[in-house]
Length: 154
Image (cartoon, rainbow, N blue to C red; front, side, top):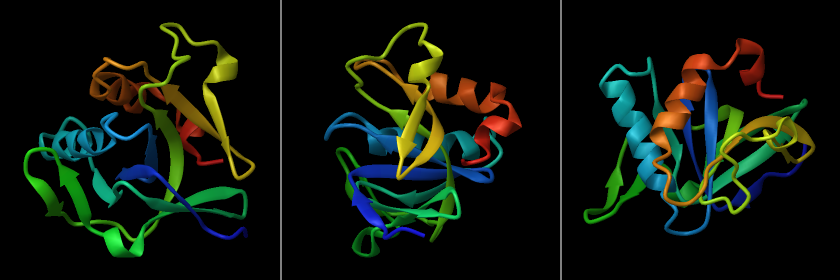
């Protein structure tokens, strides 16, 4: 087990695994988290719940990556135009894959070598999206088409 690292990211539990959403400030991390939660309410996906917004803790544990909300931000999410709002949240989850928003090297047809992220020595499936792309459709497509083995979290 490694010490937890605090990172600038958001995370949403979708089913059994969490999506770690990374990107620069203003890239839409909170917006994608809210869109996934709304997709579950609309039954586009079976389940989604906030883990953390803006800052989360990552910890490698037995070859898997765990994500927790930052203690002072647990259950809080920024909604542009409304401010900080409180939502139900999960205290911990296993990261299944990574979404990188506003990624400079995002490709329309990515090479297999770019479809993974290594975090704390753990290799995870990765979706890199360029600026200006609405991330919800590609994320929903990934959730609908990813083989179960892809989402094993390590």
